[in-house]
Length: 439
Image (tube, rainbow, N blue to C red):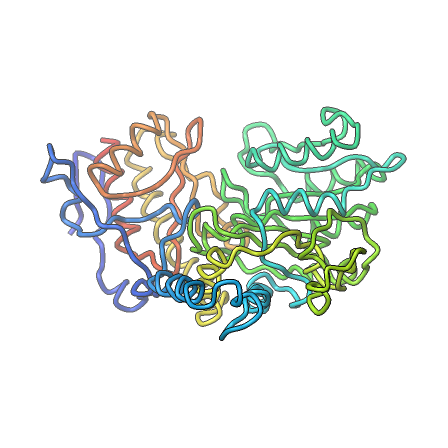
């Protein structure tokens, strides 16, 4: 049937969709939906679980994470400090087990990848190496509509070198009346700044619009003018397939608490192309854990880095933060990004179709998907613009309909059907709830 409220409609949900394309939902813990005490018959009460559309902010907990942490707690209790060098899995080598699956996830060679720190810390460490302003070559080219932390980090790196970010950070905006950057405009801007560009640094998938940038084309344009090219993969890792090594990217960083489902504030990753990683003379902010593993515990006076991404490590890795990352990476290895990407496109296509149909029944502009429609221009996130108060809409969706999404000022709500655990029913619930809230 079609559910109708005045002139608004949403096509019927077909259970066969989830039966034929079930995903890996049983590997995750889905939050329950608890209706408000003063509204026990809220529409969402029909469902025992929420429709979770916020994996682009914080992914859900894998069922195996708790046990992985308990194993390390028990090793600590049993081994104490001896667990660093002894026992069934010495902690000094723990991070090495994350290297290969992390490399496969981002299309890199194992010696180009390391799991460490948090995202913005890694951006700073990488800029310390790759942003070396000299002569005319002082500028950083990036998008203007960027997650604030990236903007703060880049501006502070420029200021650290005694330069004014207002003059040396070139921030690109979409054309008037458009929401996303055009690749040809980005390439043209890089060429226009030319030999003044020191670093090109973009988000692979834009946090606000969900736009997936043309990474190979932009990377090539940066190299054409002699610049280093780096990428923030916060919204790309585990969301879209990337090939950092083959695309000739110089450096990249990503977090693991969004699509990688490793827990709030979990560890991040970094990529350094092997042509740089093998150069042990590169400037960097060094620490003990960036020395060669075979000589690290000799406590040598001089810094002796290995010719790998491990050389950018600074501090002893936090084991209790690494265990959840490994659980997540094992799931991605088991399923594979190619398979995940195909399911992601199917879910996103379904949700977009529902939203487009709903929009035709609303006053013009009431609901507008701003994420590009072409499959090579987006991940699983759909960013939707509303003319109504987004905070009011999101609160009603959460409290009454059990739909969890997030707002981004001034007028965007983001819905991200994560292919590992989201369902077609989750997508349908979004459109059905919006039908009620926008009537």
